[in-house]
Amino acid sequence: MIRRRLGADGPEISAIGLGCMGMSFAYGQPDDAESTRTLHRALDLGVNHLDTADMYGRGANEELLGPVVRARRDEVFLATKFGNRFTGENGATGQPGAYVDSSPTWARQACDASLARLGIDTIDLYYLHRRDPATPIEDTMAALADLVRAGKVRLLGLSEVSPATLCAAHAVHPVAAVQMEYSLFTRDVEGEMLATCRELGVALVAYSPVGRGWLTGGITSREQVSGDWRAGAPRFAEENFDANLALVERVRAVAAEIGCTPAQAALAWLLAQGDDILPIPGTKRVRYLEENAAAADLRLTSAQIAELDSAVPAGAVAGQRYPEAAMRHVGH
Image 1: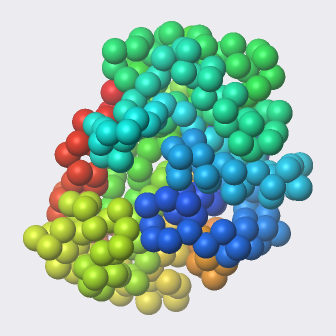
Image 2 (image 1 turned 120 degrees about the vertical axis):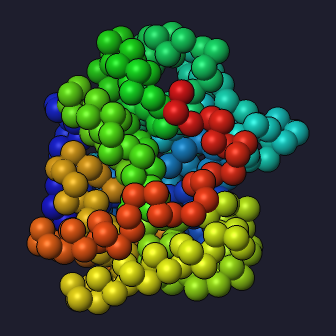
């Protein structure tokens, strides 16, 4: 696995990482045994960038990763996140009983809780997952900087923030990475956000790089997502499904010309957008992990990149990327 530097001064980590959310949350039933095999296989392949969060399965995902991380700590670059809390009621983030809290008090409490679930002393990269606009980002970053000084966290990151928030946060303490949704299906970051990251020397970690499964080419009917989070996602809604499926078929055709799978084409396209882009495709299956990791070996020509660009023109994807309630909690 090729390596890329995380930000201007960070460590070199695997160019393609592993998003672990679906092992415990949102994408069907968990399979802890297969997920554990996938985690070990990832490390065997040199995929050392593992991404989790305290909200994935309400802590279950961190607990799942814990034994693997502890057993192979020197091989792992571990990222986790805080900022979502749970109540007994349905909350505004679109997840059952969840609400956003980026207060300094919660930052400290959440970090300690994640360390306990993981069973480790230090988190390599700690993200603010979602920001509550009522809490000044400077206050949150000051608390996170204290965690760095205490040795509980090595590097700091932000997720789904605005360029202005990134600049304000970076002025308090260096931000190593910003995690944003980025794929052929979601290209919002290509304007001011990516330019700001590059000006500051901040890596962009791309989550959902295969469009929540769309760009694998494996989704051909709405019934396939009826049992998971995507059933309520606008891009999988009945009124948008066929239009988006047609875009996937165009990507599939380009991938066939290249001689790879649609997912590999989508990942190779992302890698070609710059050495500061680090995709973290999610899976809980060894075979999909191996397919995704192999995309790092693809070198697309400029013509192939242009073909993929034109396969999914800007604005062509039908539907928002999240339900309306969740969209209110991004971009702050």
